[in-house]
Image 1 (tube, helix red, strand yellow):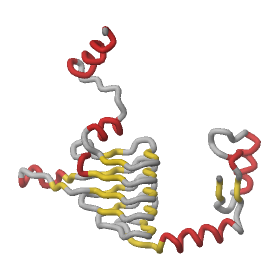
Image 2: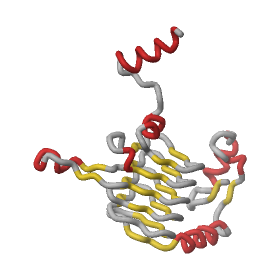
Image 3: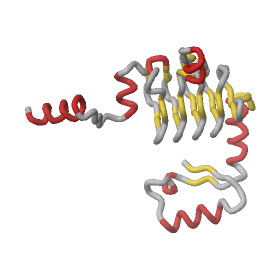
Length: 184
């Protein structure tokens, strides 16, 4: 009983909310599918999260911003611009990317790190840049990477961040001295 009172006191009188930003966004209307991976420092527009819909198997890499509003007009016009953000299934959004209001991202899409997405992206696309531009299809990108795997170092699960030994770290650094590689 005391613990419930303590939680109520923290939240309502002291305005301390221990829930994650993602939990708060979901409570406020964010729609999120199954098997999604939301990494650290992702910002999902807290003021308009009910306008954001994330499909199944979506990865948001660190520091991605999903914005459903743009307050640049607020002082002059008294109104902010708002728009839905809809992300399809099987989408990867690279680190530091920004998705702006009114954007629909199709399914099977890869968005490169640092990309600014101001217009909708069709299904089966790989996009990069500022502003985002289509680089190739999803299938072309995967085939290119598959071809690279036959020519560059490929590391098994013993090289993953949570299990890698110091010896394996040195082995990986040496193997990647002048190229990229792939890790399971």
